[in-house]
Image 1 (cartoon, rainbow, N blue to C red):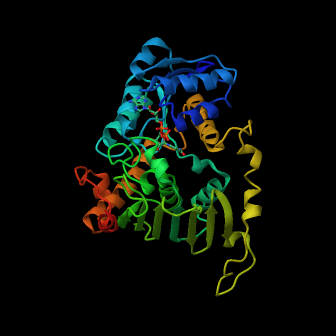
Image 2 (image 1 turned 60 degrees about the vertical axis):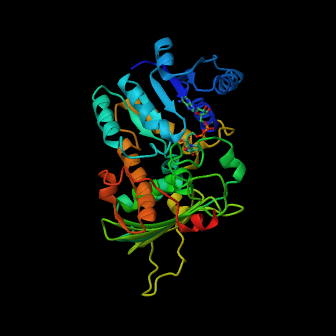
Image 3 (image 1 turned 180 degrees about the vertical axis):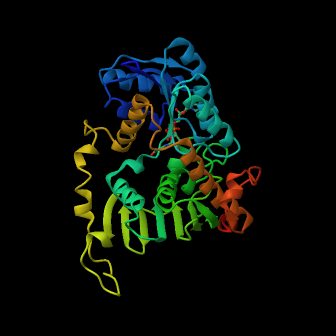
Length: 388
Ligand SMILES: NC(=O)c1ccc[n+]([C@@H]2O[C@H](COP(=O)([O-])OP(=O)(O)OC[C@H]3O[C@@H](n4cnc5c(N)ncnc54)[C@H](O)[C@@H]3O)[C@@H](O)[C@H]2O)c1
């Protein structure tokens, strides 16, 4: 194991900069190469890295050029979503570790290919992970550990909602935004996939998905700005999923998980409510009606300092938390906290929403995952066609 991990960032836009900032927390990581189709984007990120006191990385137009010029150990992929699998396959073929921004990609047709490439590379010690930084928040950790220990009893239902606002200017800021080919979807695929991942992490494997989507408050985008769905899970539990970028001025992201012996609410990444019967003497045949909040006592086991970035200006700290896991996985030769298979499942759940909305009928998760609808061209729902 080398002392220094040489990193390349492919895609030097908004989130490429977050990766550069997050990696500065880790003295063992050195950014040696920046890859972008637009040289000015890579040069601007190189300036930022240099101004923060690090050696200026080399700037390249393609990953192949970067790999030929530099000894790269790890690649962070922060390009438009529709390029992720293709570029990750290049990285894995070169036997380098890879961190892929969410979502894994926009379609599932190459999901099996990437899963087998990851498996083959992992035999050579290569680690592949997909960003889902909110899994590493205190609140999500507390909830997922309670779920794993069965503290909520039977998980009966969940409500997951992403109620955000994105202006027309946001969608106009990049050619790829709001397109099926490169964004892969709208509010649910781009903004909501984190929450879909949390929902599946907590509730398990989906069985059936029934959805509607619409484009209601934006122009010049192909995809939905509003999506709703119901999901049934393998354990019989039921969930409501909602994602929108048309909720001005933007409300919160909320995951509410409910079980026969406990419930939790994560609101804007914070543990707003937690109650497990095993930690309480209070009981009533009518329940506690929202009382008995144990969130503070539960969070005491997850000290805030373990979750903060050392440098408080690093924002968002979520990427720092996930990099702790990824660099630990590389060092210890273990699987990362978020695997490519987890990301395939989240992508399949989002695709299932689009397939269901397009066909106007419920669909089985396993059919979508198995590629049955890979050729289906997704459409936004009837509300959008009424508007245009
Ligand atoms: N984890 C999160 O919270 C989070 C937040 C925002 C975006 N993202 C994800 O990050 C990815 C990028 O989003 P963004 O907002 O940074 O987009 P962006 O448009 O700001 O940046 C993308 C960059 O990729 C470059 N690029 C395009 N084609 C390329 C190619 N073939 N090779 C190399 N570079 C190329 C572009 O020139 C641009 O600089 C998306 O998949 C998005 O879903 C994740």
